[in-house]
Figure 1 (cartoon, rainbow, N blue to C red):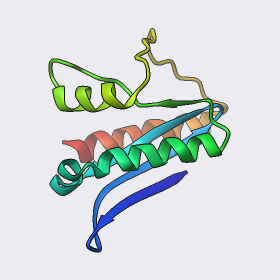
Figure 2 (tube, one colour):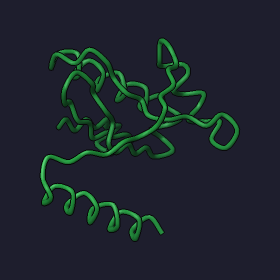
Figure 3 (cartoon, helix red, strand yellow):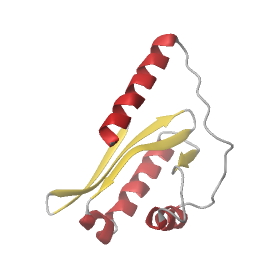
Figure 4 (spheres, rainbow, N blue to C red):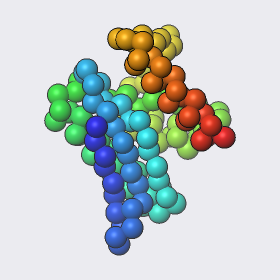
Length: 116
């Protein structure tokens, strides 16, 4: 896991938690303040995350999904930072053991409760 934080005048304004597994880096959590968005710090944090993934031997960096109609700001950001857009058929889950499956399902339920 990589945690990258951008500061301005000692204040955190942009942050990302990323995972580098297999051959793909993936952003798990991204947060920005207004200053982070307006100053371009969010671009810097994504760039640093991509460089860290490359240095860790990752061949790709997954920026996650985009929705041009419902989230135009994120669409604009990701379309500017990515070299090419790719499409996948969907998400499939598989678990190495029953405990891992229970852990992820529980984490997902807690996340959904917090999100509300």
